Length: 69
Image (cartoon, rainbow, N blue to C red):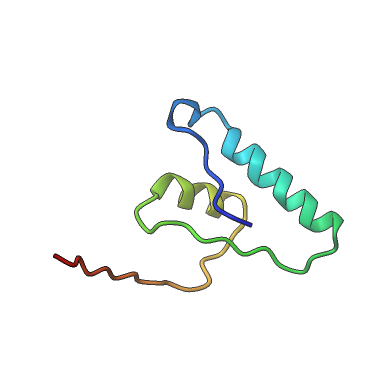
């Protein structure tokens, strides 16, 4: 599945939580054993949401970029 996001004008209304819970309900319905997600390291609001919803940080990933001139 590709990235999912809530448009900035609609953030803070609980839509992300609803979307996350719907996705988790779907995984439980399908009898999946685990749900894994990735989040940008600077997205504090998303990280707080995931922790409040019971996710545990499994690993830390660092990304690097190199700008070509």
